[in-house]
Every structure is written in C-alpha cells, then in structure tokens.
Length: 113
Length: 110
Image 1 (cartoon, rainbow over the protein chains, first blue to last red):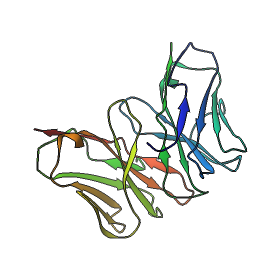
Image 2 (tube, rainbow over the protein chains, first blue to last red):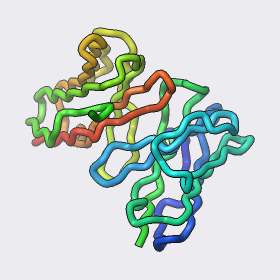
Image 3 (cartoon, chains in turn brown, orange):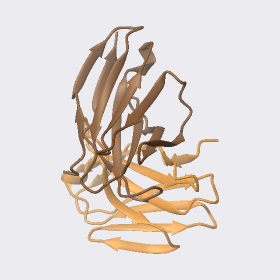
C-alpha cells in the first residue's frame, strides 16, 4: 500500500449533477496529481497541485476543478456531469514539485447515468 | 500522434518465459520514464523507473532506455502467473506532466 487514500470508493451520479472526490496524500508528500482512467485506457492527467496551488493542467474543461488544503489533502470537483465522465479517478502523491515518482491511491469509480 | 505508445496486446507467455514490453514516446525532452503494473480493478503500482540510457535491473524486471530512439522497454524474466496484469508505460515531460500509454495486458500461462 502506498499510504494514499481516496474516498468514496464508488459513486453513482446522474447527468448534470456535481461530484466531489477526495484524496489524502502519503505522509511527507506535498504534491497531488489527479488522473482520469476510462475503461481500457491509460490514466489521463487532469491537474496537479503543489502547496495549495495548481501547478499544471491537462486537456480537461473548466468544469473539472480542484483544491489542495494546508495538510496537502485534495479534492477534485466535477460540475455538470456528462456520461463520458464515467471513469476511475486516480489521485497520486509525490514528495515535491516536479518530483519524479508518483504513488497512486486506490481510486474512485464514478458512474454517470 | 499519441505522446506515449505501447505495443498492442494482449501478450501471452508461458510460465518461466521472458515477457517483453515496448514503449515509444514523442517528447524528445522527456527525462524520466516509469513502468506501472495495474491489476484488474486496481490502481497502478510503480514497479520500475529509469532516467539514464541503458539498462536498469530490479529483481526479475529490467528496464531499458534509449533516448535517441525515444524507446523504453520492460523485460520480465521467469514470468509468473502473478505477473498477469496490464503494464503501463509513463513518461514525465519537462513541465512535469506524466503521460501514460494505453497499456499492454500480459497473461502468463501456467
């Protein structure tokens, strides 16, 4: 186990709703990255937070937003859910900005109906 | 062109054989390269990373990097049924974005 935790494990929402996913980073890690993994695909980078600031963003629309808190835990918020948002959402923590090695949490499986 | 491409699977190998996985990447400035293993329904687990050209060995795993050819590979020696999983190649760009390939599914036949 990596020490990265995520909640909830599974979630079912309907189109148009909003969702918040949570992540606690491994002890000593101040950088959190979020990924979306659709079935049969590799993880796609959503964004990264370092010391409470967004530090990089992938090709995701603004309805995907996030926060990092002083204890380095993080939230991913998705507004106006679409069917294609159904995926495994992964959080990964690393021990510093640009730090090379990222360790993944168990993920949150989101289903949008 | 995808940023990271892996050889399409699935790859089936007999127990005890060598499994060979390949990956190419498009960003010539990339400096760090990773292999993750992902069991069905689970999250990716880091198994190897490599930064320098050449080979890096860790137990039954060997990663190989050729930056001139923009090519990374992973060899799994003495394959075991527990090695059956999807293997993801990941490349860290200069802006610290980690890009993944689609993965290669390996099945080790007992």
